[in-house]
Amino acid sequence: MTEPRLWTPTEEDLLRQYLRAKPRMKYDPIAKAMGRTTDSIRNKVFTLRKEGRHEWLDEERIGFFDIETSHLKATIGNMISWALKPLGGETKFAAWTRKEATDYNKMDRRIMKELIEELRNYDLLVTYFGTGFDLKFIRTRAMILGLKGFPQFGQLKHFDVYYSVRNKLALHSNRLAVATEALGIEGKTPLPPAVWGRGRLGYPDAIEEIRVHNIGDVEILEELYQEMIPYVQITRKSI
Image 1 (cartoon, rainbow, N blue to C red):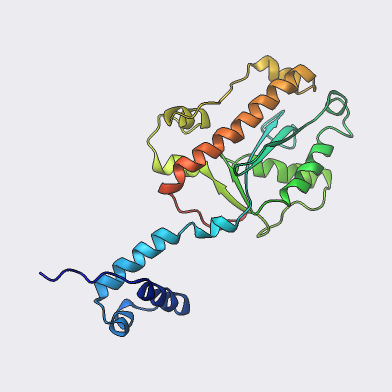
Image 2 (cartoon, rainbow, N blue to C red):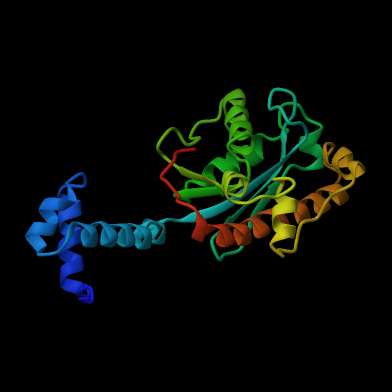
């Protein structure tokens, strides 16, 4: 039986040129032009696309994002704090103060403005259930507060690790704490109800505990993202 002919770098580059020129081109004419079998072309295309599916991420400014709020709905509650960690970098954090938390005209206005400004530094935002909560919440708060500059459709990409965990793993629960514990990722810090109660009023001691919790969540999210990357396809989905 004849051994399959190995692909040379020149042939791989030529195949990439065919695919870029006509992404929907059938494999038969490519095989004929390159002197290979259709199965050989099909298998190589699969390999090249698998290897290159995340190459575009190398050029992206990636941030891991999480918020803490006083209520699950943005028409009732406010954002207490946010944490945003660049890939491999130091986390930025902002929270309201005691004075802001008790002043209806201030509340989360300042930290929302700071967040909108900080988002300009990123191309791809990574969250855990941000589709269903974090992004909807901050968008609503920005609109209610009349703040300009919140990313519009197509201006900031988003990847939600929650759906990768839900679709690729078989956990008894898809909560972040369960996913990270199952994979041996340490750092999740549950907080008692009293901390959230005091945090809603901006007490410094409670805000400090929330800070540790909020930053911890983005740090373990980054680790979980790295664990899940080999098993998923990240698409250029807008927030």
